[in-house]
Image 1 (cartoon, rainbow, N blue to C red):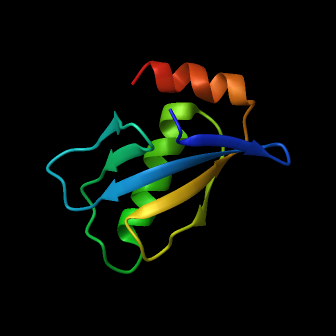
Image 2 (cartoon, rainbow, N blue to C red):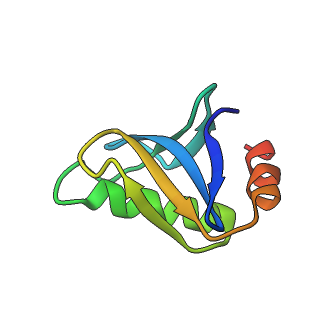
Length: 91
């Protein structure tokens, strides 16, 4: 999966956020992970829910690195690359 890279002790994951979904889920795609959230795309609500979903799935601190106003984002995970890759295989 081309969605993942590592720099300066953080793992960067490319995501596409789909706000206003009927339920929360994460779906692997070829070049990123699609994160469907219930929250609307207003006032950062979808971004906040997406960060919480990713953080819960990987069990590590997560921050939004880039893409605040775009559906295509990059999140930074405080985790070893191998651990993130192993969790991605479970999607």
